[in-house]
Image (cartoon, rainbow, N blue to C red; front, side, top):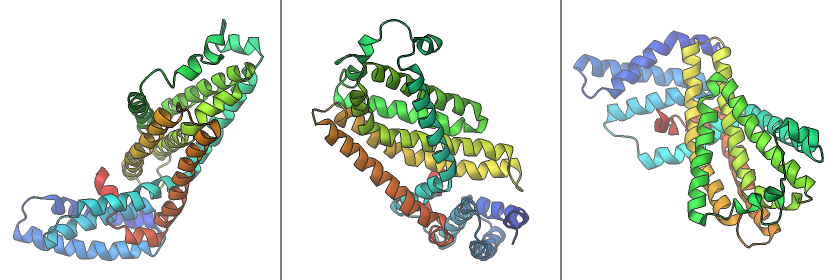
Length: 329
């Protein structure tokens, strides 16, 4: 079965069903048309599910059917049920389906950071090339700017500041992805900043402090940025190569998945902000702080790879015909 051709053949009927299900009042003829389209579309969704379709298509069509069902039977979807389905299917499924993209971003990002750190360490020419001049002791010394950055504000204010900043960076990476270049630039500048700092701290013999302050929150925070960057680039590539769909249809479909990821990353970055605000600058021993960060990172990745893999399978998609894409439409 050619899923793209099948979708193109029926998309006008699906759009009509969506329009009717959203209307406040229906004429008698429109009510009959709504019921007829609902039955046909339900059958078409069942057929699509048996042919391993693109999960974004199933999720979007399932949302239309759920809305139409609610209109026909006179009941609205339960908000809490939709929220639960979003976090058990919608968000992890969208992240899992973009796995290749954000893992590639992670490898490239870490490779660039490591390369820059190795290049700048004990290399005055590299420092001059990157514009790092003068005495860097104020940054790298014990109690210097690198460490006081985490302690100069109150914990709650710093956590809120970090959350806001990281959410903004993630949003830029996600929604500027359609242009590709701005996201590549944004990711490179963040990798450059980490690489330069790591190189300077290594030169000062203080890599233990660098990792001790970065890892407790940085593992989860950077993973969220990788996911945002990967999803954004996937959206941009969809514009370049939409497959058999029109560019507008392909970008709209991928855009819904991108919006789901954006919404799901908000609480993820909140947790990272709380770690940076309360755990990173705490008086706990460095191994304990890193262990807490590793626990948060492990829990998040386990969630993505278990719930996401389940949601990405056709069986998972069948259980989520009304998945949390309601929240982003």
